[in-house]
Length: 307
Image (cartoon, rainbow, N blue to C red; front, side, top):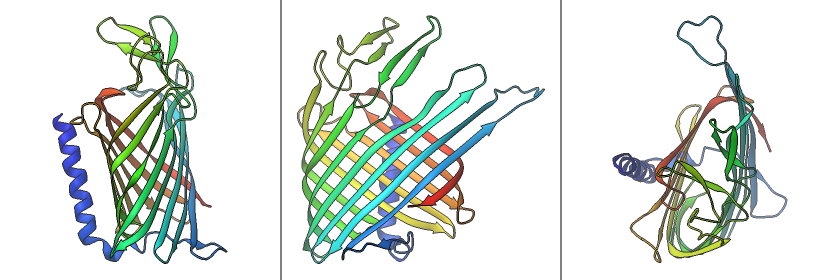
């Protein structure tokens, strides 16, 4: 819990500093190509991330391994008069091979974000947002004792659909905050998955126990709550781009004090037009999925293609 509180404070501090100090930098982050339709702008990147380790007669020990990730990040934005509409598609998938083990998944993400705004006053707009999030393939826990792999997640296992009206503060595409006090969240479970019970030390089917907040034998759960999201992207220094995405959600209908947190930090350090060093840090807390802080880190050499 101390780590979680520290993460929240660091995230809030980062966003606050960005709101007050990076106004002169955010407009220089990305070059967008205007579309043929007036008001529309598109930009995107296809990234291949590579990492590898090998050892030979290495006294300290080590396991030979190699892996790779592919990521797609594409933006379709509209801005004309009092209306703005920001759309973003994010896809990530990664695999790794350790010596003596089969190929295993290291990353899997599919997410679509859409945020519409109509100017109310100054930088404030009335807004409506939608978010769809899931993964592409099954994720497994590996039972080495029995030699069996148990699927713990998969395509729409779970899937999250979140949407609602609110108010948005937006300075530009790279700096905005959206507050939505009447947000609907639908958790979908399209098939059977398993969870590990520490007490019995056994794998239990989602048909027998509540999984991702969905009751046994059910395929859907509805929530109503408060959602807040902040986005900031800026140049920390020359050739160092930093992107912060922070989302918070509280369910009015069930334990509102348990706030879901999703924070992603992306750092890109270009080497040349096509190569860069990429670092992604993601921290997630969702008590319906697991009552622990989830953490994901990706680091490696990236090959980038503009879309």
